[in-house]
Image 1 (cartoon, helix red, strand yellow):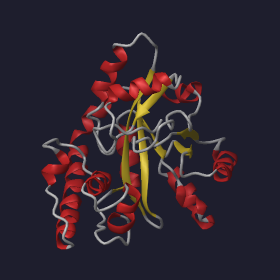
Image 2 (tube, helix red, strand yellow; image 1 turned 180 degrees about the horizontal axis):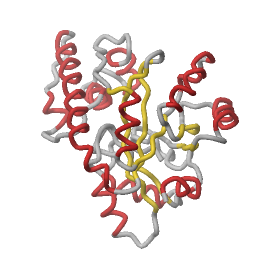
Image 3 (cartoon, helix red, strand yellow; image 1 turned 90 degrees about the vertical axis):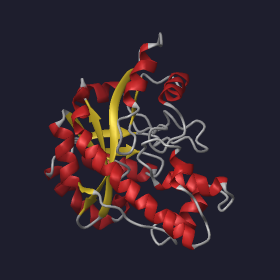
Image 4 (cartoon, helix red, strand yellow; image 1 turned 135 degrees about the horizontal axis):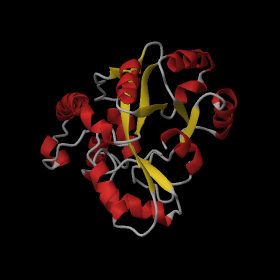
Length: 266
């Protein structure tokens, strides 16, 4: 329920992801690109051309701000094509990403690393993220891998880190639900800090439907605790957060039952 394609910062096409889903024996999946629905149509076409029955949920991952915690990502899962009407919001989020990317490239240039935007986007209107820049830094030999690129340049406190304007978590939830979707908190690593658990009730009051309790960044211990504390009143989802970089057998490892997702999305 959490996969990224080449339409945001993943490296595989939706068609290739469909093939991986089938190879891993999954009954369904969701593509949740950052601030983009551009890969949804290709995904439906790829599924249509397969003999296997696959349950696909159109999705999107939004970066939001929440007072008291900071950045929280929210996954939107949609029951129908109503998400198409979110075009104005998506365009504004893409513009915000582009503005940050240009600031990062200017900063890298000041540190002797000249990268043109066109080298990264290849003329495509993608929601450009830090991962795109990290991969290019690796390609040019400035970093040994994307993790070290983030560590030195792109993560908070890195040489060229810049925040970007995110919508509030309240706005994201409102937009998602207004377009016949359900809203789920993604990879809630903020729950590793005990006092942050107090914020969960506030997020629920804003209308959140679920929380991702299975994820590579979520330990088994935290996963169990989330299930115990929230399983009775929130949809519990899981996902690999697959981007393709060195993640060979990740898809399906953090899955939840198809019946659980169908019970919410139909």
